[in-house]
Length: 112
Image (tube, rainbow, N blue to C red; front, side):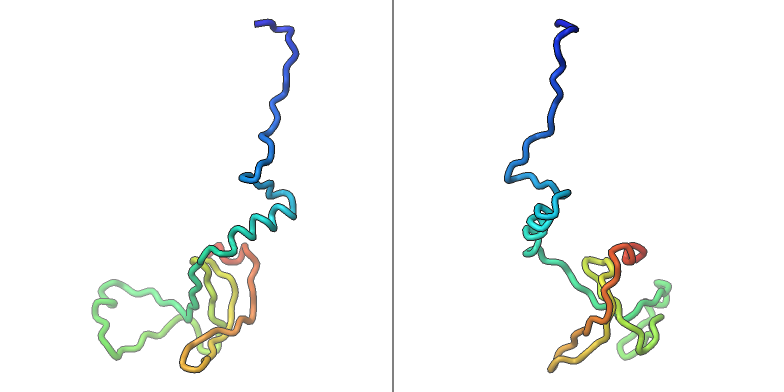
């Protein structure tokens, strides 16, 4: 091997239809388009309560549990377990729904 031979730099792999440079705004939009059909689970959380297992085992039909959230407080909207926003419960015909009142920043849901 000749130590005086010129060194050829190794370049990054060329972009192909299977690779996306997410640094490009247009490419990021295209990548987002690929995810539009992915299903996620949306959960409306009315409230929470921590209980000991012994107390859970004592529960029976007809009992009520008091939740930590006060009546009238906004309800949390979770997407795959992460906070998306908050809203208020509404009745749509014979079903419940939620009126979104706030979308939170992506970093706000990390504590859940």
